[in-house]
Length: 131
Image (tube, rainbow, N blue to C red; front, top):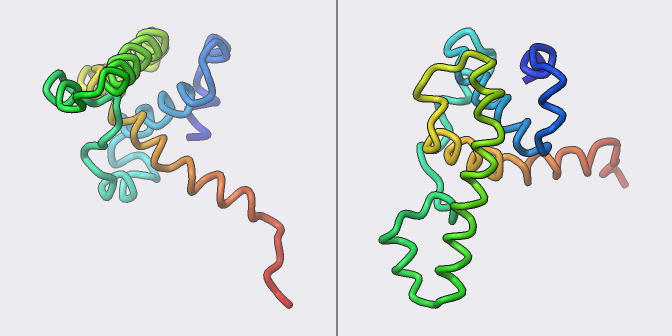
């Protein structure tokens, strides 16, 4: 991911940190076997059960008006964030399948899945568990 940040242009500063992380994740995946993260990427889930990934059928199955609204809002927000990052992803010359909204949703789910582990690791750095 470090290479992505070095390669990216200052315009990436207009994105939210989670968008930058998602773009960098997709950038590393775009490298394929050349990425040092490739073996790890092979073990990631192929889909996530996040609201932004809900289709019309899943959204309507929620039945409660507020839950339906929340799912629709999540999709709208995800599309907005994807549209903001799309130009930057094209500048990185990503392969067309990685530029899709479906790929963005997957990468966002991956970022959400990784975040607790990342935060937990940083929160415990330097802490000694010795008596």
